[in-house]
Image (tube, rainbow, N blue to C red; front, side, top):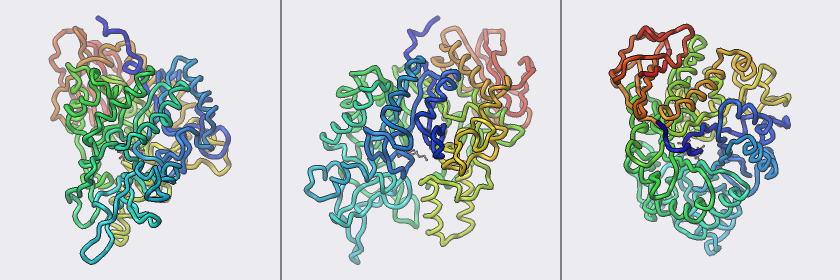
Length: 576
Ligand code: TEU
């Protein structure tokens, strides 16, 4: 029984690195490229095949490098183009690949293209961005062209005094949206953002907000779902516009088809599997795979992410099932992830970060993720079970534009109402993007061995680093780190079942245990997970076959014969 030859981007494990927070080599408090190079053997040893580097480009850093000033140079505190070439070589010489973040929905407002565009209405690059005249209310008040809300709060339009028009920014006002309708803009992006690095040997891209390039040309108002405020969420109007698929086909024909690359596109606000399949079918080449966000959106609010709502285990099972099975009997491919740089840590969100449970929880989630079909993505620090920042950290410790802007907008809207602000703070403590951006915890020396700068890192180091760090886990055979390594080996050893198998969930409405099977031809594995502190029985599903053999578990000394799970216990059985 074999799956056709492994394809590197399907069978490979991807490890995401956030350069600001991985390793500081020159003691300025910020991570950098040489710091990553110094940890390359650690990464290889983990069982990683592909490294995904979050933006390393020159940037004024209003959104941690997702606001790019120059695609062809490196943010100076991170290093130089030569340092990045060294990183490419360090990965390649160890048999690993390296992919970059491709951020081409918008640039920084300091990009020279935008500086030209905003200089006058008749500048040849005026049309490279999205400019519109003001609207005027009956009383003469100047209004933006429509009511769209920026993903980072406030209007998605910014008034430009000099040329007396608004420009569109779906994210921060320092991130103007590019006009993809203009072929010259697209060509410039292909050359500057893509080919420049592909020629240097980079192996592909994680493509930021890949479904927002085509927004139509009408810009209608969004329906009102958040009453009492003018700006409204508008993702239904700016995602998956009419020319999206055409643009991605063009990107493939013009650029990607010349190289052996992988692409993984960020596909928010696209709930329909049939629609997602249009992006990833192998016949109509657009993207190799996408991130669909249902799993990490669990708990986010309807009017705004930071208006947190409770979620249930059956909901989680349904979204996992949906995105595990939507490729069955198609030629599409999927991804498996539960963390990235935009999310709270998975242990704190989906299991328990209480001292008694955090290690068990980390291993439970490692079991769940390693058994999933698709390309597996692990985010830095997930492999040692890093958790959210402590709850007593005040808002001043948080740095992210998304959290800060929303907190400030609620403060303004409610005149500093303490109840409203408490509610936002509680959401940020769980869902805030900063949790994933805390410095990597290497050892128990000051600032977790991330930096030797006297004043510490750019962002506060987690209070728990003296006990939760790489060095101590390397020494301990029972650590989360060694467990992850083992799980990644197991995933590869049984690649047909885990990477390529068919997923089937059982007992969906059970609120405590998550039981699913993976099947490939005649082989079956069953995964049983307890998502609570209390001991729970589970029912062995009828998957055919007779003998259940415990392959792996996160509670030492269990032989798997008793159908009861301890708190946060997880097991995988092979059924023959
Ligand atoms: O995120 C795109 C995106 O859709 C965000 O709304 C994401 O869902 C949000 O951060 C979750 O809270 C990408 C990057 O991953 C993010 O870091 C950038 O800030 C953003 O694009 C703008 O480039």
